Amino acid sequence: MNNKICQLLNIKYPILQGGMAWIATAELVAAVSNAGGLGVIGAGHMPPDALRKEIQKTKALTTKPFGVNIMLMSPYVKEVMQVVIEERVPVVTTGAGNPGEYIPALKEIGSKVIPVVASVALAKRLERIGVDALIAEGMESGGHVGEITTMALVPQIADAVSIPVIAAGGIADSRGVVAALALGAQGVQIGSRFVASQECIAHEKYKQAVIKAKDRSTVVTGVSTGHPVRVIANKLTREYSEMEKRGASVEELENLGAGKLRIAAHEGDVDYGSVMIGQIAGMIDCIKTVDDIIQDLISGIPQVMTDIKNIVE
Ligand code: TUI
Image (cartoon, rainbow, N blue to C red):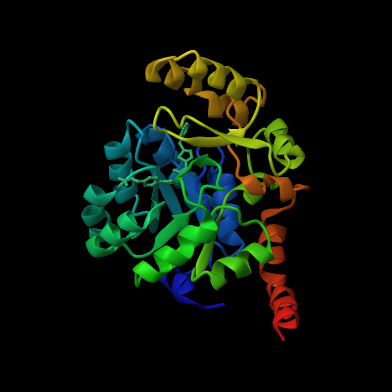
C-alpha cells in the first residue's frame, strides 16, 4: 500500500492509532509505529513536562514516525503545543474542538496537522487554513463524540474537501477498513481495537470490560453539559444520569466525571471509572499483539473485496 496517507506520513499502512488519553502511551504508540502504522500519543490533560517525557520515551522505542493527539479542551493546550513544536513531533492530531489558531505554528516546523472533525463545516474551514488531512470521526467512537455516524459523515466530508480523509469510529476489522475506503476515505484511525492489545498499558480489568462489551454496552453521557462522551454503561453512568434527572448543575456533573478515565484505565475501577470505548467493542473478543492486529486488518482486505465482488457480479 502506498497511497496519499502513506506518502504524507511516511508510513507503510494507512492506519492511525487513536490518540487515547491515559491509554495511548509510548508503549502502544511505538508498537503501532514499528508495525507500520502511525502510533499517536494521547496527550489528554497531560501537563507539558509529562508529555515531553512521553515523547522522549517514544523516540527511544521507535525510529518510525509517530504523532501526538492534542485535546483542545485541555487546560494546558498552549503549553503542550509548545512542547510538540520544541520536540519537532512529525504528526499532530487534534480533538474536541477547532485547532485553527495553532495551525500556522505547527506548519512552520513541518509537522503534518490532521484535525479530528465531526462536521462538514469545520472540515471545509480547516482545509482553507491549510491542514494536511482530516480525520472524520463518527459518533460510534469512544470518548468525546460528535452527532453524526461514520457512515454518513465520511462520504459527506470526502465530497466537500480535496485533502485526504481518514475515517474513524466503528472500525476494528478488514470489513471496516474496506467500508471506510468505499466511503471515500484514504486511511483509517482505530482506537478501541488497540486498547485490547498486549502492548497497551490500560489496566487488565479495562481490557476485559472491552472484551465483555456487547453492541449495546456503551452510552453517551454529558450531552446536557456540552461534552458528550461515549463510555461503557456502569455505576458511574447510572449515577450521572440520576444527577442529570435531578437537575444537577453543569459544574456538579463535570466534577463527577473529572479524573474518572484515569481510575478506570490505570487503577482498573471499571464500576466507578470512565471506560471510554467505541460501539465496535462488541466485536472485540480477544487480546492480540499490535503486530497481529495490523497484519489481520491488512491481510483480510483481499477476501473482503472478493466477497463484495461475488455479491455484485
Ligand atoms: O476528542 C476526541 N475524543 C476524546 S477527547 C477525550 S478527553 C476527555 N477526557 C476525559 C473526559 C472527557 C473527555 C476523550 N475522547 N475525539 C475527537 C473528536 N473531536 N470527536 C469529536 C470532535 C469534535 C467535535 C466538535 C471536533 C470538533 C468539534 O467542533 C468544534 C467546532 O468549533 O466546531
